[in-house]
Image (cartoon, rainbow, N blue to C red; front, top):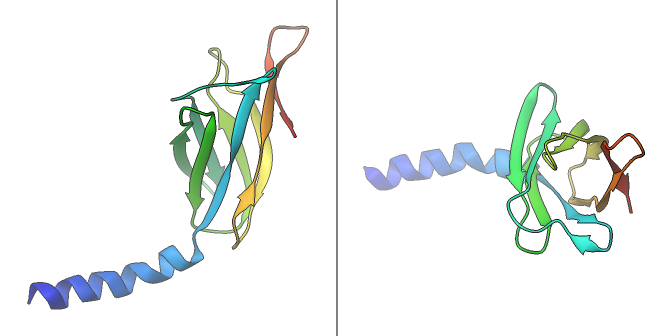
Length: 110
Protein backbone atom coordinates (compact mmCIF):
# COMPACT_ATOMS: atom_id res chain seq x y z
CA UNK A 1 0.00 0.00 0.00
CA UNK A 2 2.83 2.40 0.85
CA UNK A 3 4.46 1.68 -2.51
CA UNK A 4 1.26 2.52 -4.37
CA UNK A 5 0.79 5.77 -2.45
CA UNK A 6 4.41 6.74 -3.08
CA UNK A 7 4.04 5.98 -6.79
CA UNK A 8 0.90 8.11 -7.05
CA UNK A 9 2.60 11.04 -5.31
CA UNK A 10 5.63 10.69 -7.58
CA UNK A 11 3.46 10.66 -10.70
CA UNK A 12 1.66 13.80 -9.56
CA UNK A 13 4.90 15.66 -8.79
CA UNK A 14 6.90 14.73 -11.90
CA UNK A 15 5.15 17.23 -14.21
CA UNK A 16 6.01 20.06 -11.80
CA UNK A 17 9.68 19.09 -11.78
CA UNK A 18 9.80 18.67 -15.55
CA UNK A 19 8.54 22.23 -16.10
CA UNK A 20 10.72 23.75 -13.39
CA UNK A 21 13.68 25.66 -14.76
CA UNK A 22 16.83 26.68 -13.00
CA UNK A 23 17.87 30.31 -12.63
CA UNK A 24 21.48 30.39 -11.53
CA UNK A 25 24.52 32.62 -11.48
CA UNK A 26 26.89 34.51 -9.21
CA UNK A 27 27.06 37.76 -7.28
CA UNK A 28 30.18 39.89 -6.92
CA UNK A 29 30.95 43.20 -5.31
CA UNK A 30 33.94 44.71 -7.03
CA UNK A 31 36.23 41.89 -8.01
CA UNK A 32 35.25 39.67 -5.05
CA UNK A 33 32.45 37.24 -4.40
CA UNK A 34 29.75 38.38 -1.98
CA UNK A 35 30.36 35.16 -0.05
CA UNK A 36 27.91 32.76 1.55
CA UNK A 37 24.37 33.18 2.85
CA UNK A 38 23.38 36.30 0.92
CA UNK A 39 19.60 36.03 0.54
CA UNK A 40 18.06 36.10 -2.93
CA UNK A 41 14.39 36.15 -3.88
CA UNK A 42 12.89 35.68 -7.30
CA UNK A 43 9.28 36.88 -7.65
CA UNK A 44 7.24 35.52 -10.56
CA UNK A 45 3.49 35.72 -11.15
CA UNK A 46 2.68 36.50 -7.52
CA UNK A 47 4.95 33.78 -6.09
CA UNK A 48 8.31 34.25 -4.38
CA UNK A 49 11.11 31.68 -4.58
CA UNK A 50 13.90 32.13 -2.00
CA UNK A 51 17.53 31.09 -2.16
CA UNK A 52 20.95 32.11 -0.95
CA UNK A 53 24.51 32.19 -2.17
CA UNK A 54 27.05 29.50 -1.40
CA UNK A 55 30.64 30.10 -0.27
CA UNK A 56 31.60 31.29 -3.76
CA UNK A 57 28.72 33.76 -4.18
CA UNK A 58 26.85 31.42 -6.52
CA UNK A 59 23.12 30.76 -6.36
CA UNK A 60 20.61 28.40 -7.94
CA UNK A 61 16.83 28.70 -7.67
CA UNK A 62 14.19 26.59 -9.43
CA UNK A 63 11.24 28.49 -10.90
CA UNK A 64 8.22 26.36 -11.85
CA UNK A 65 6.87 28.59 -14.62
CA UNK A 66 8.49 30.58 -17.43
CA UNK A 67 7.99 34.33 -17.69
CA UNK A 68 9.03 37.74 -16.46
CA UNK A 69 10.37 37.79 -12.90
CA UNK A 70 12.15 40.12 -10.49
CA UNK A 71 15.37 39.02 -8.79
CA UNK A 72 16.06 40.76 -5.47
CA UNK A 73 19.19 40.57 -3.32
CA UNK A 74 19.40 41.33 0.41
CA UNK A 75 22.76 43.06 0.63
CA UNK A 76 24.08 45.80 2.89
CA UNK A 77 20.64 46.37 4.40
CA UNK A 78 19.20 47.05 0.94
CA UNK A 79 17.20 45.07 -1.61
CA UNK A 80 18.44 45.98 -5.11
CA UNK A 81 16.46 44.27 -7.85
CA UNK A 82 16.71 43.39 -11.52
CA UNK A 83 14.11 42.20 -14.03
CA UNK A 84 14.89 38.72 -15.37
CA UNK A 85 13.14 36.06 -17.42
CA UNK A 86 12.62 32.42 -16.51
CA UNK A 87 12.51 29.90 -19.36
CA UNK A 88 11.83 26.19 -19.64
CA UNK A 89 15.62 25.71 -19.90
CA UNK A 90 18.19 26.84 -17.31
CA UNK A 91 19.32 30.45 -17.60
CA UNK A 92 22.37 32.12 -16.08
CA UNK A 93 22.37 35.59 -14.56
CA UNK A 94 25.70 36.87 -13.18
CA UNK A 95 25.63 40.22 -11.40
CA UNK A 96 27.92 42.82 -9.91
CA UNK A 97 26.64 44.78 -6.93
CA UNK A 98 27.71 48.38 -7.47
CA UNK A 99 27.30 51.16 -4.92
CA UNK A 100 26.06 54.36 -6.54
CA UNK A 101 26.91 57.94 -5.56
CA UNK A 102 23.84 57.99 -3.31
CA UNK A 103 25.14 54.95 -1.37
CA UNK A 104 22.51 52.59 -2.76
CA UNK A 105 23.46 49.30 -4.38
CA UNK A 106 22.34 48.42 -7.90
CA UNK A 107 22.62 45.12 -9.75
CA UNK A 108 24.56 45.28 -13.00
CA UNK A 109 24.39 42.19 -15.20
CA UNK A 110 27.74 40.88 -16.44
